[in-house]
Amino acid sequence: MSPLKPFGESDNPVGFYQLLIAHMRALQVQNFAPCTVSRRGVYVRAFANWCSERDLLSPQQINKPILEAFQRYLFRYRKPDGKPLAWSSQHLHLKEVKQFFAWLARQNVIPFNPAAEIQLPKLPRQLPKAVLSTEEVERVLAQPDTRTIIGLRDRAIFEVLYSTGIRRTEACTLQLDHIQVERRVLYIFRGKGQKDRYVPIGLRALTWIARYVADARSQLAGDSDSNAVFLGCRGRPLSPDALTDYGRRYLRAAGITKPGACHIFRHSMATAMHDQGADIRTLQAILGHEKLDTTQIYTRVGLKKLIDTHSRTHPAEKPAEAPPVDNDET
Image (cartoon, rainbow, N blue to C red; front, side, top):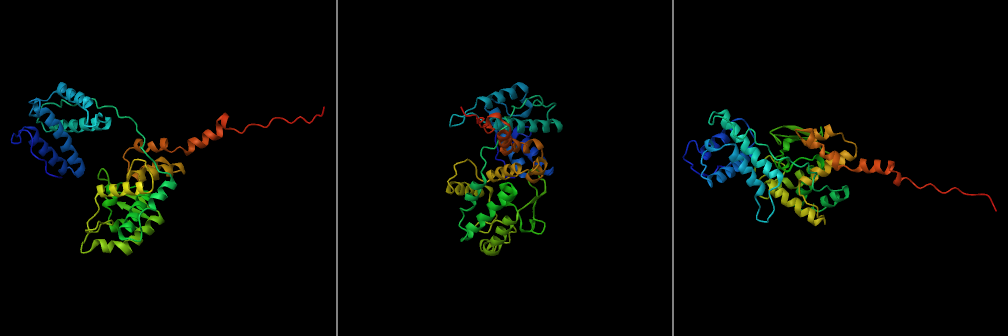
């Protein structure tokens, strides 16, 4: 967890800063993921700064009307480009603040939770912004120059992303001993939500990993003792942001203007597998979704079955019957 810079009355033991630090430490003790702990700090600090501008310097001063005013502020806020905050962003702001106040109430720091009855904005059920066709995926995968060390590494990375649908962070933290070739699976250690899982991987992706490990990885590793599969030029594991940058570059090089970078391979894999008959429970296990509702977006993205059924059953799509032939001569 990155250190939280002081704000407000940082020396006040019952002020926002000291209580937020205590809350984040408690989350660490409970084995919450570092990204979860950092996110809580970012959003609660944003709320505390908003309160500070209104001379509200302690959680004890906060009540339900104040929290409702903050919710209205989020709704009316406009970013530098003039656009409002997305519903998902407003939802996340309020969710993190609610969790903070719930913890304060459980610790008896405050007598009751003023955020308990705050209703979060209803999130729209959004579909993935873009999905690649099989032909488009192959064009992207053909972009890295596999005659070079970096190109060979990048081809292996994106073959893995497409074959398995793992997240970019999971690819960056993948270790050599997590690749189980004989079983044709990857072991994902502490994926999203601190959950381990096994993910099937295809022979083609395994072949590219083998080529990369045999011909390129040792040159990238140098004197590094890192066990990570995918390394940068200094022998350190790649960062998720670097992977996103590579993905965008290869998409542009392939002439694809659809938005996305790494996650687009996850969406494309899941959509293609569902179109080919993969059931939703299997996809849920592969993708590591906690809730089936999250996976069910692919029943709405996968259009092949809908199109096939429409073509087969819609009256206007049926071949027109030939007019009867009159053989009577006049």
